[in-house]
Image (cartoon, rainbow, N blue to C red; front, side, top):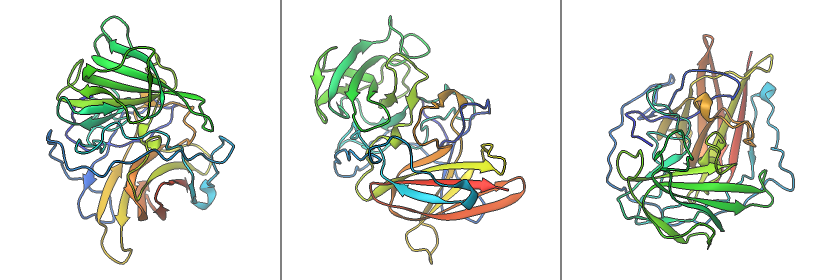
Length: 329
């Protein structure tokens, strides 16, 4: 819930205790991964139009469509974009990329169990889906994180989600300046439930947003970017990589967006690792890295591993999830 100086992203498996890592947005990319510092502002940026949740499920089964690492394959599938954005314009409704889910800012911060929406104090906070309020109040006596008063003024909403891998999920809204609902109250998607603030351990006014499998379990979080509906025209990328023995590996991916494949990349990201403490093995996609809410189009994914260069081109489609599986020999 603190600002970082670098743009971080995610990748790691639950079974390994690796150092935490992050990712940095860069300018015009070269074939090899590069980084460039970002200056963070606390002033809300212009936002995209309000979007409604796309309740898209992967058929009747909860088993993800397979992508074979042996062929360095990718597949485009329906996703579980069941939550709408908890901020709407004129507030900033885009996720802050400096301290995303799973980041520890090089081991200097608590592993991040959610995502941030930086907005001025008093900006309306909206329910991400229909549900009932599991908890509304502060966490000074009842812990939902690692310490007392970690989240400050907060709300947790319970959602029943048929047709997804979890029949019930919980969304958490933290660091509020005001709660406008009470425990046990029913809420509807898009309803104002509180206001942005800087309570608890927050540094600066913002909304901290989480998706949890269990409401009281700090270790049960899922990456919200795989559950929040992307902005119109955008989709989401999930990546995994293994060696030829099937063991998961953890490279740093350079992901470049090409609106026109014959022209230079329009933007690029260094996509690194989740901290091991944030990994939830129940995540249905099994990703070791992800990049959410990106424009539909062609993307080049490259990385170095054991002295070898690897790359593949993939497509992101509007409202869909692209799953990329690498196998390194």
